[in-house]
Image (cartoon, rainbow over all chains, first blue to last red; front, side):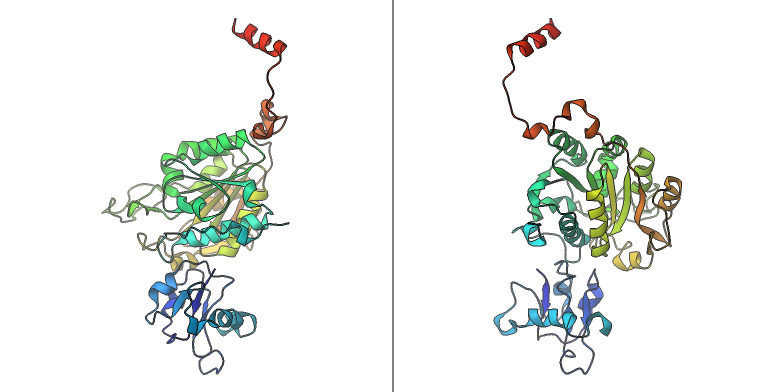
Length: 90
Length: 289
């Protein structure tokens, strides 16, 4: 289980502020691959839902409730940390 | 085959508030159990009453929710009934330091082989925000309008004086560090306390994640010797600008159930039930006549 940020993200950043385990990082601004969103590290997420409650765009979902059109976003969130800049972008 | 986090996943979803420290504790408990190589059927988690005491329902380990303040007596009975079981208690600061304070002291003193996890958020969350035994002096709540006028109970210092053989403190915002402490506590033979500092995002607006992050530091990184009981006690008294996390004290002495003569043949729960022989019945009768 983990929460997932989807393509609805407008880079508000409230999610990263409330995350109790600081596992949400902004994609570097302007980066064509990662810059459009914030990303949740699925390995550190504790499923508390604070980010989902805070998100003004309702862009965050539990990974088993991600809408069909964002079906590849759970993998994208994970990839930001395994292949992308991950915590170094902080 | 070694157990994984998936083996501990329960179909029941937590009802805690978004951002509650209990989520971090739940994640760390599951991770710690896996790290210690324990499978769900080998573990009993006993809780009391409180938000955090719902935790056993959110794992697949055996669970027992008791009365407020009473998880330790139930855990003691369970351990004596089946000392092959790994028994973990999980309860809040109200449960452990309020009604359960006497049980806490005696369980530590007896060195019963259990892991005692205290979800310490310095407030009664389930009943909507009254000050608790671990609230800092001056803490304003619905029942302490001018600020608490009591000295806060200190689980770490109390466990040290009572004779606890593993005394540690973790932080719900540091899941990995907490899981590691829980794994060490599970591997310890004897009474093991992990006092867990935990924000209550709804009713405690003082001791927040940020408040803790500015203050906590690692005992290990500062070279604290966990074999030194006096140094551990000094560290236990440190609170305010700097708050120590990690293992305060660790020692070895025989655990309670190890010394109970009647348990030497193995756990009562797994012994074969045999009818008494005529000679045994005669001996029993003679004792009462």
